[in-house]
Amino acid sequence: MDYIKTEETPVNHLHFPTTELNHYEEQEGSTKSCESRSNDEFSDCDQTSSIANELGLMELHKDNKAYKLIYRHCQSNLTSHLGDQFQIVSILKNEFKTPLGQAKLKAFQIYTESVAKKNGGCCECSGNKAAAETARVKYGGCSVEKEELKTILMYGFSHEKQFSNNNGLSFSPNNAPFQCMIDSSSSCDEDGTRFLLLSRIIMGKSEVVSPHQGSSTQSYPSSTEFDSGVDSLTSPKKYIIWSTHMNTHVLPEFVVCIKTPPILKTKKPKSPWISFPVLINSISKFVNPSQIRLIQKHYKEHQDRRISRPELIQRLRSITGDRLLVKIIKSFGQKAPEGSRPMNVQSRRG
Image 1: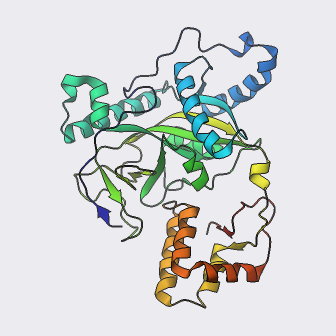
Image 2: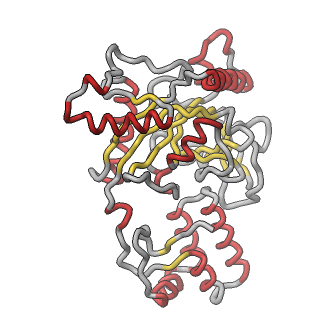
Image 3: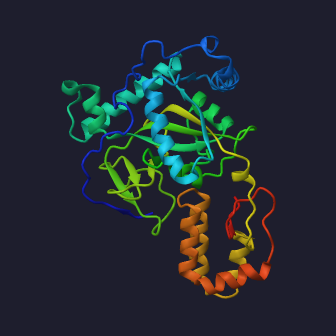
């Protein structure tokens, strides 16, 4: 990939509670036990507490400051996409109480201070808050399945994660947490619950990563001047933490458990359906080899989670034109199988 280097934009403050590396303040009595709740709440409490115990996290009570802030933020963003067809079941917190958890928290603080110093900050004088601001510590979201969430919390991030590729990890900014759920292929839990992982990420000085150009093999900053990647300096929709930094510049902190109704997962498209590999093969009969190579490149970028499905379809349309696409899709005339997503052009991994 080619990287466009521009002047850094001013530091933006976090939308969530604080940039300091200590825990969120909790109001007195905010961690009420299940026993103190009403009978109507008991079944939900039992279910969500079970998930919290399984993941080794603490379930935040609805009176908790962090719960209220995260809930309002996610509720607002999710409503704009799903209306009222979702439920935020619970918000879980990583308390870093184990020796390994304490080590991860301390390491993240050290790297925050190091990046702040590299970018001109004076951490010794200003404290953790100033260091976090200078290092541009932000919140990023990614959609994960329960099993990979367990692995992340226990061992850290790896290239096998569905929101990662050989280059690193891709996060949605906290002003667009639902975007990562749209782009992700992660499936629901047995009861239809999706898991949104919110992590603190050290952005430092970012460079713009252009998905339209260059190689996809780079897995670290283009120079020591930069620490992370974004798709736009002014209005980023994607944060990229390189694979060399994925377990030093990312601190998993909250998990938002979101339940969506079955209709959102099983709705059938009413229009003809075709898989991307079959579509690309059909297109190859009508366009020149250089255009096919470009289409295959964009499809690979989609598989690597570097562009979303809508972006892939838009690029495909710009290369082939709508008339050819409609002709090919209609010629198949088949409907999507049960459970497929309602798109005219359906992507499949691999």
